Image (cartoon, rainbow, N blue to C red; front, side, top):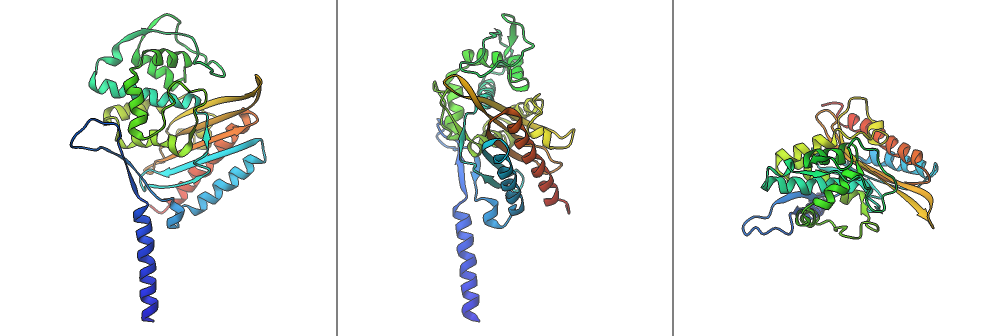
Length: 318
């Protein structure tokens, strides 16, 4: 009996040590600070390793399997309970073309510079209606070509309406130091001049939203401003389609048309953001590759719906 007790205790101690050793701090890189090393977030073990969110992971797998039978060739999911710090994923390390998802780090770069130069966002620049290089389609814009707008207004158009012209105008004007610093600080590979071939995973991309929620890269003021804009995004066919009407979702979508010899063969559609479930916000990032846009949208909406229900069940007694 004594041997059993010691054996059990040793097993639990080893389990605790494994969990402890798998918690890794993500510290800001590329800074010039001598005495501080800002903490951005923590990498933690998957929640299923601790016996949590196992039912939701099974539900994710069922939805992914269903999507693969209905027009999708790949689906990746990354979920994180932002208050509990627990996460689960399905194919979360697979990479996809981010497309308009990269508008978020562009916004972060401008806000980082604005922390040092508060008048920056009042600067005006002429709107350039050209789309981003290699963009699959143009997004209708309410902005007038050649008319001058403040950087604040252009950032709003880029995030809320996913305006490609606003994005092109901002990228032409952005300070490359601040844009590169966003990627360097978070330890994320920088697309640089090779955005055509650049890909990113759901788990990695989610880090942009994590540092905004934690206000650990930008100040609280600018993190709040960024998430407020993201909560006004007009795209409603993905994460928003899977939650009750009126639920606040700060998110960004990205769409990339796949082609062979100039002929469209499919689409990659991603939608990532924070769902503000009452008192228990969570982060959900779904990336898909499918034969058509409708199949991709349905996959994301189905996963969003089952996630919202699972979080409700998780906290039903609280």
